Length: 256
Image (tube, rainbow, N blue to C red; front, side, top):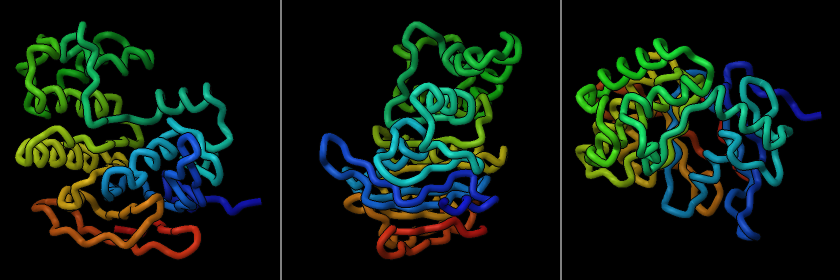
C-alpha cells in the first residue's frame, strides 16, 4: 500500500507517467501543492506542462502513478467521477477564453454557478462582483464578439474564480496577450487566489511570469528540473525554488 499524501497538500502526485499516442509526455513526475499556494509550472512548449495540469485536474487519466486531491485518490476515478470532480471542485483558465458566444459577459461568468445549482440571484450577483474586481464591469451586457482579447481573457478569469473553487488551474492563460496585458491578468489572478485562499497552479512557457507565484518548478522533456529563480514581482509572495530529485523527479511543497 502506498503512503498517504501529506495533510497540508491539496494536490499530491507520485510517479506520474503519461503518453500521447505512444509519445511520452510525463516521465515519472512527483509533486505536492499546498493549500493556498500559488505554484508556477514553467518550461518550453512541448515540455509536458499542459499534460501535467491535465493529470492533476482529472482531465486526463494517468497511465501510471497516483494523483490525490484533499487526500482522496483521483487516479482510481472513472470518467464520470473525474468530470464531477472538475465541475464541483476546480476552476480553469486556458490560453483561449472559450466563452459561450451567445451569452453576455455576465452570463458567461454566472454559467458555472448556475450549472452547480446556485440560484439566479446568487449566480448573477457573484458574476457582477467578479466583473467589477477585474475592472470589466462595463462589459457585462456585451457578447464576446464585441470585446477585445484582453477583456475576453479577464472574463474567463472571472468565470473560473466566481464559484470560489478550492483549486484553479491556469494553462498558459496569457499566451495570446502582449506583455502589459499578460502582467495585468497574472497580477489579478494571483492576487484573487491569495485574497480568497485558493490554490492556483499556473503553467507558463514564460519564466518571467513565474514571479507572480510563491514557488515554481520547471519541466523539460516530461521531467522536473531545477528552474531559474525569477525576479519577484512587487507585492507578491516569495518564490521558493525546489530542485528536482532523481529517478521519480520528486518535488514536494514547502511552506511559504
